[in-house]
Image (cartoon, rainbow, N blue to C red; front, side):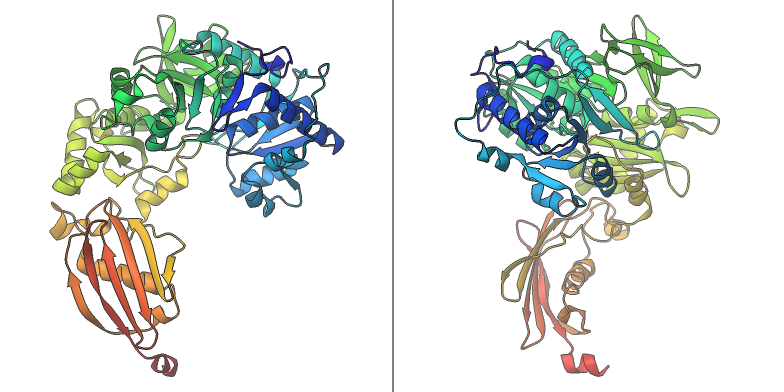
Length: 580
């Protein structure tokens, strides 16, 4: 195990791998960091904002900045408010492939694409063997998610990151597993926020795990990345692990997977049991941007604080934590119950609501829903208009099939019956929305605005991409998927949901209206045929072919396997449109 403060030391093995695909050895990595450090010093940079897709280039940029005495600013995403924050705090942006995107929003700051900049390094360039140390007061600035109120800026020092990474590397049961230097850290989380920053950056360097450069946000891509290596550790979240399911080639994964780290929320017991059965029991980490890591658990037992972490409760029962990496005592909004040297998480104080004179834990409702075999993800809250409990669920493959074959009402009834086994009747949601995936951000949070939209705006059409694919002159294709909660799946189609033909025709009309010619009045529909059903979660491909001479639109709508609807829209002549 290495110290993070000494990670650029020339005494460490120059042939150690820092990253894979492509491989990056320590000697070359250190040269790049030293060269970039010199460029930052020469430019007089004091603060640099970072945005990287590649975890290895991210690590190089952080260490180069710290080596140069430059603080780093880490926006968790490129939302306008985060861009404005970074622009106001920094002197320059450091980036990789995102540099072109940043150029348009950097507010006059230079954007250094460091992967291109390093190409200008002279081939004979050598690091200074006497000047490799990193100062413990070097800083990284991060922003909280704002889920508990207004977002706040949190400052982490290199000394704090070193203490945290060392504690974690000592604890992790698989830190020294496998062939030395070949246990690859594969992540579904970004290093731009604290969980990824701690594990994909700090712990990987300290434990000697080469980094997989990309962020793998889907089960399929994470599994594909795993198959490329002999020994792998996953750094991921419950939102992704809940979507793994039984239907994977676990026999191929099991010999390769040495450990699973999960953070961002408590992992449902059923998911942990499935992973333990097919591969390895996950190690869950609990903490926050303000506190850093606090506790860990494996399975459904108590959360156990790390040895260097002191915990307690305020008068309301909410947890506080203090550690060498927390920057003093930090009060959280998480309610706990202490037991036998550990604790149980009861949920955030703002997620325990009083409803009809009874306390209801939204977190517990979500966990109970996640135990159902149809549910991949869950978010509960009060309906924004009616102030009754509402559940927004992502269904897994079995749940989607149940909705297709039994209808929405049957799925809701089954979920209510399931909750009734563990919840008071008042804690069973009145309102339900279904999706194939919930829109969690990089910090595994769901924005309040998205929850509100889900329950106040009915779905009348798929989410059509902004751009159509033009395949020829006056010919286009557009792809999407039928929503699970399409408003038309009621009435006659309640037990066997399908898209009514008149709705399919309206979708074609809406897409045509993106063009001037498609906004004309329709004289008639010719050769209209409905050949196959279009059902929830079906893939959709719409083909449009406009004949300007005849002023007709030929269309075809397919469900991924067969043509569902086809025909021609005949428009009024342009001169008639103009005359009107």
